[in-house]
Length: 407
Image (cartoon, rainbow, N blue to C red; front, side, top):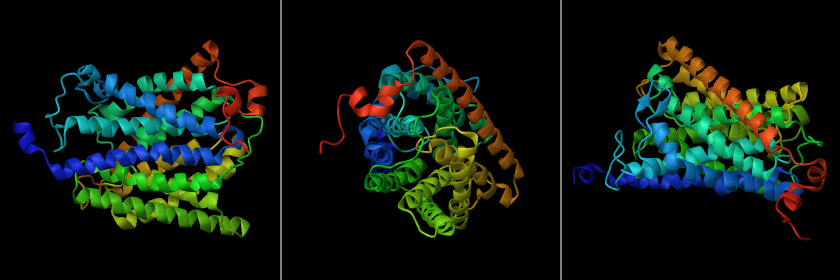
């Protein structure tokens, strides 16, 4: 067959690997990262939110999510509803813009949808009903993630406008961070809003798995085993390293001692910020992106959150929402024609920065408003929040009738 003759086995092997790496980011990476930072009475519930979020997103994606995200664009807003349950997509069909099977592109994108949903859970840890979370994920993926993925990646209006988002600064991180903020505004604050990680060792392992898996996330978005993937790989690693060192230095300046929690928070902030830029910028730019994004997230977590009083339990908004925004802005500044076809402000195209700002505002407003409406409806119908008794005693025993530890 013609399609089989055009398939590149090297590219296919790499994206198969990259898809598995992105899966590792959620299971077990994010589950351990969030689980370790939670209170010990909520560790299983926190991990469950990542587990079930991944599974629900994976099912939605093959049933109708991929089709509406990447189908032929209808007025730039949503994809044409074809190939439900992937019917009509044969194993020998190639993705039209690459040399890999379309089914492989489907599963690669499914892992992005899954981790985006799971990221939101960090903000609501310790107080949301498990059943309400499951219902929320189904509705949110359908009405928020899928349209935004189409707008930016699937040929929608932001794609046509020229918005740059190599691996998910807007689609994944800004989107999940803003959604987290909207959800917690409806959900309200916990009785005890202190961050008391019960096992930082879990969180370190989770952060390390996130860093490891992020190479599939970013370098895999080149959709081939090529030079662009290599650039995305090195810029990703460099930005994460720069951000970790910056956060550690701030900790030393503020308290006189480096903290492990600060180190892993910095690394994740750097990974988030480089995500939209990884395939558009060079190494010096990645250092700047990683280093500067820490000041944004650190300020949000240490000053903005206490001042405004929103309870972002594990800082999904502070790290993913704001570092994702910062990375998208700097992509419009540092995008280099020597790396990819895009040109940023620094190389003579100020219009790209304007486009990036438009995309940020559009994604943020849509995600916030629709998420807020979804949360309000669920709160009025099935209730979002556990009882005060359940919150005090812990969600593990009350929501799941299980304990993380029997000692």
